[in-house]
Image (tube, rainbow, N blue to C red; front, side, top):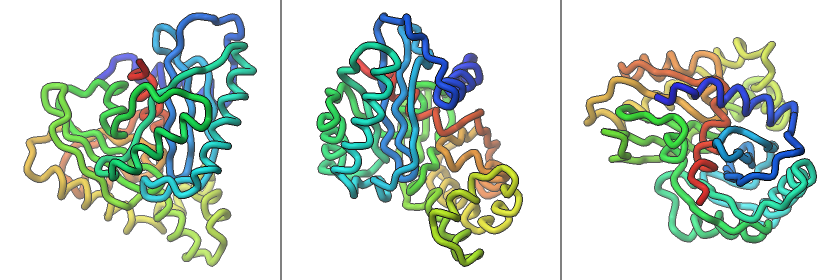
Amino acid sequence: MNPDLDTILTQANTVLNKRPFRSDYNGPVYVGVDLGTAYTVLVVLDEQKRPLAGRYQFAQIVRDGLVVDYIGAIQLLKQMKAEIEADLGFALTQAATTYPPGVPLAEVKATRNVLIGAGLECSHFIDEPTAANALLQVADGVVVDIGGGTTGIAVVENGEVVYTADEATGGTHFSLVVAGGLNIPFDEAEQIKIDPARQQMVASMVYPVMQKVGSIVARHIASFQVETIYLVGGTSSMIGIAEVVAEMSGVKTITPPHPMFVTPIGVAMLDR
């Protein structure tokens, strides 16, 4: 695994939340876009491929890996791009982007066209778990990207992805359980789900969904010899989910800090 992983993710969390931009930077940049079911992330790396700038925003423009609000996606990405350009003082011209494994080719093209519509040439597009591994640098193991709508799985052997899969269970399903259990609107449930003061309550409510994620992972890796599972994606930060995946799969499971930023940083590293 990447020895600098924790440092890079901590720096990304600072940049994307507190925005301490280096306004004097004018070197080459690497740009990544992750159009998620819950959050859209745009991250810019410097010439050392360290976080330089970025934005992330909750937006329901994608469902189960499919772009469902094409115009909204373009407008959101265009706005995020303009804000970052204003901070940095120069234009962003291209970016790499991701898609869940198993998404039809037509939808992959739709994701690329969102970038083009926002004024970014699409330099590269790749499945989410493989993008995540560009940062993780897992030589042998399994990368599981638990996003807003889907759980994506990539089995890595000798540094190469040998198997990918994707199923429609993710953070949205957790929010729906919270909304139903508390009899509240979905948007309110989404806020409760990410409230640190209520995480323990939420974890107990959504435990069956955690088990569903664990069973998906266990089923897809059953025919492989796996020693470690690495969880990424925003939903991976939920209390208890790594323990449930480990219990269901029988495999040691690790969640890096700020897992929502792993995939967008990884895909930015592939921008060229």
